[in-house]
Length: 218
Image 1 (cartoon, rainbow, N blue to C red):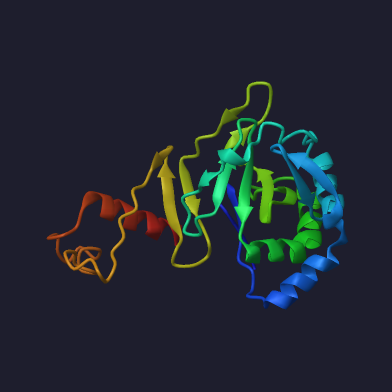
Image 2: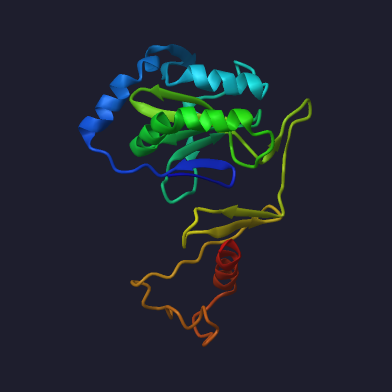
């Protein structure tokens, strides 16, 4: 199932066998088309669909001209996929193999939805490509306003929403919420009592803010 959270696009793909994945990739003939991005020759996937979206959204064909693969860094999510935030308001994110397969499968329906949706806070996928055996997606950034004086947008609340117990508040008024986890191996912390205000022996203000943010996400 596709999930898109915050300003990022994230996909949970069903597990697929290696042979099924290879067959699906072979069937995508459009992957043969190539362009140069970040100084590398890259293969494009399904660009006849994504080109329609770029045209409809007024995205220039050179929107990745400033992108360099060296700009990719840890996105901070649990998946650990590298991500780059470009100065012109776009995002490039590396895709895991399962995410790549999911985007291959869902591209047509996803682009059809994007084409007919006027207003949404969901990120818009603009390009799907492969470089040096790694997969990437380029997309819009809901934390940026385009124009001659492009600027970042500071939302009052920024959540990471997946529709599960991982939902949490990331920032308030642009300020990052410190993640304070409790794990079974943290023997020096109470596990549940502190969170329920039954005791305060090992709790912290950061932990309480983090748990309050998770409750807001639910």
